[in-house]
Image 1 (tube, helix red, strand yellow):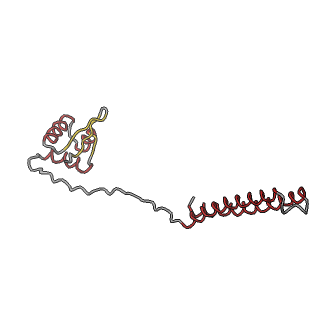
Image 2 (cartoon, rainbow, N blue to C red):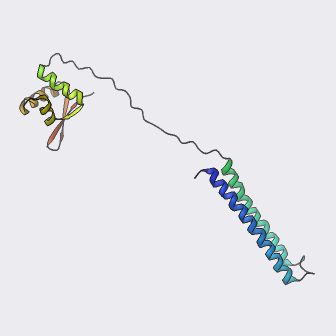
Image 3 (cartoon, rainbow, N blue to C red):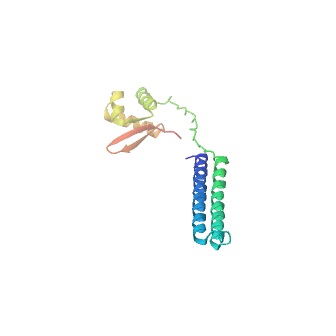
Length: 161
């Protein structure tokens, strides 16, 4: 709930409480008139007590109204949203001059996918398990790719420094 709405709610409740105070005050004055008599009603000690209670209740309600006004006119704090911006990483240039045709093909498949299961790499390259394993060993040795174990499978990812 916004501060302004809470402020209006507090002021509304304060007005209702003020009305209750004055109704209660008039009822108490009627009781004092009937119990003290008409000639003593102004000097009756109960009359002073009623006035003190009324002023005290009105003071408390005025404090409530001040709080309500402060909430209405106070500026709501701004929400700060922090969003992380991904830094653009410079694409690493790979020197593929010392790779053979099959190694380049496997490297390009990994580069396109960024990360690929070794079994999927075997399917896409149409090479055998042993051949892919040797090619990945060479690519890993030269720092082009990295194999990560995931359960019974390997994931081949591009190595980025």
